[in-house]
Image (cartoon, rainbow, N blue to C red; front, side, top):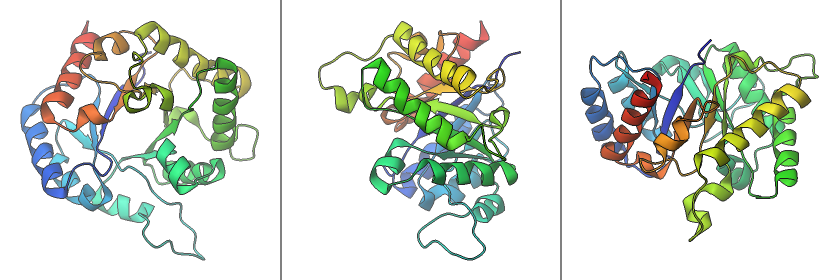
Length: 262
């Protein structure tokens, strides 16, 4: 069985709302009527989310929320986006657990578990991001195991059903802005990283990954997309800086279409 394939251009807060709308319109026009072999997605800032989604609805491009807050009937969360808000504007996919949410906003694995559970209950497809900032494999495995066990809770009364989510591995140390002059990982290195994630899920968490897309996010760009998407255990990507222009993101999309169409 071929897993669902997903590529998300993650715009963070880099594009102003007017820029986001312009690029969304261009992408929708570019891929109008095309049968893409993967979910081609963009994740604009919360300020632009509703407007961008109104443009991409019923097109070959999907709009993804960058984050959400879990519901709590006793509390409200100022500055946060709620699940009912996402439902009302028609969002069907949402990221959680990005390294910047963990690092800068102090989000815990328990927070992420609550978000995953709530999104699944609301029938919004979650993309769980995990990651590390170390290059020593043993340390990397320890960090990723802690994140996956904490966010998925496979031994709990209500474990996360990973057949209903995607998991994106984002090694912070592989992001170009962190590596200075060091070369980015090649495809075989990415294969090893993704195999590590899969082994933690299957061997430690005792979960079946046969229908769980595993995405890679570490400076994915036109120059390395072919190498990365040619790896059998890479089912897509989170694309950061290379998603900020239509030319660059569409090149990544087109490479994926060619690779996965063979």
